[in-house]
Length: 260
Image 1 (tube, helix red, strand yellow):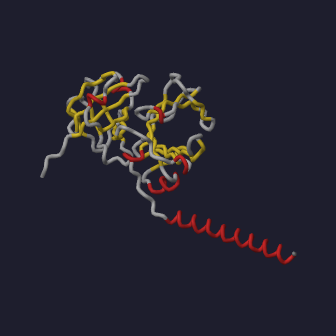
Image 2: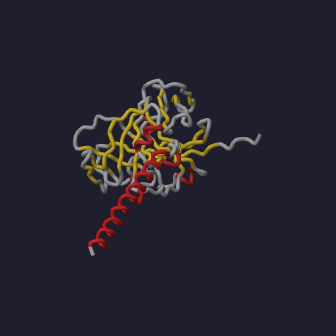
Image 3: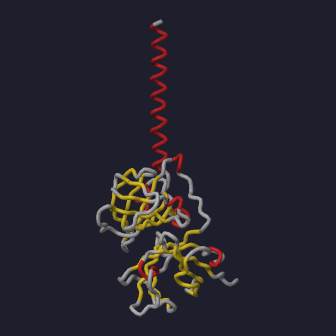
């Protein structure tokens, strides 16, 4: 009987050792995997914008003491954030879904950590600042919920208003605004600097915007308030609109390249 017990215990110990060894080996293999560069168009999760207004269905995030809306239910992936105290931080931010926050930050260049990873309820998140002043959020979902968002629109970029001159700006004569090159930014951020006599007024000049590629602006903009009618922006025909909750959306019809 004692020999039998010893054999059972030995077997259990061996199984535990083998299991631990397997876990360690799996962890080592995971750590040795090459870091995959971020694909901002595919991994875009939302744009977060601070507001003073209470929004429907807010929830409170205890870790940051901020009220947030459910961006997954917003047709343009907008997250509204509201603090009970005056907010003095960067506004807005752009969020991306990543497999590992640490690996994404390691692979990135010119990022400064603003907030170390913490539990935000639906995901583990961390905030960073880019060299040009944009705020980026990395979101690491639990494996069972780490699926790509269902979006009917193709994300293109977010636009941020600035008064600072940025490197390699180009001038858009139609709106008298200087803009930076979207594809060259690792997080698809476009900086906009308006000339004092720009004809653009209101939300487009005052608020950040989120832009999507569409086949037909008129179809995509149905039901939205027109802020700027479609015009030629050089690389595409674009139009600006406002959602019912106050977000600014840009729709872009890219011009087809001529056949060579």
